[in-house]
Length: 240
Ligand code: PGA
Image (cartoon, rainbow, N blue to C red; front, side, top):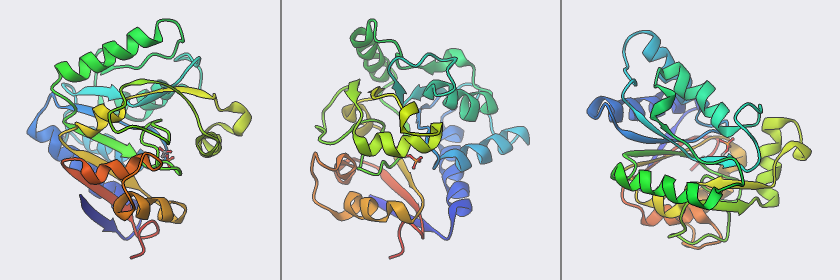
């Protein structure tokens, strides 16, 4: 695990964009898992700017969705697929057909999860997984307690996640209580993982992630055992 600490969020976004751009330059059809959430948005804006300047080509990228709310269709403003499409897929010019999506409908959900894991396997695993850090150590919606080998599946959200997601949609009453997440097993097997963490409110959970006990109660602590992890934090999150 490599820890990179930047002065502020802007520097974090530039550094994260550089890491993602390097992966794309080395392999134009890289399989990239893309998180939503507030933290990676600066990275995506920087990548979109580079693409607009003709400095980056993401047309052959294979994009994988990290998580989705169950029962929230793509046209709903809370759709996490919609958020990913608006912030990453469209601005980077990757065809939507190149996105491996998670199911949002409860119908046939289990079969769709197995198809997703099959697609990850066929891609040879993620070349890069870009992840944010939940207030309770969740990665995607791998909520605690979580097994390191957990597959892609549906899960009930914890209170901590419902509360942190409330800021996206205008209150806890607007946050669905059930979600689908790419499995911890699929995340752990990524060739490279970029965990982005910003803000003083992430200090305690970041410290537990990096140097606390490895435990199902803090799913992100499993990253201590993953192969190639970069933790990219700003100084507010890692004052050291
Ligand atoms: P955030 O979300 O980037 O909005 O802080 C991270 C998460 O909860 O996974």
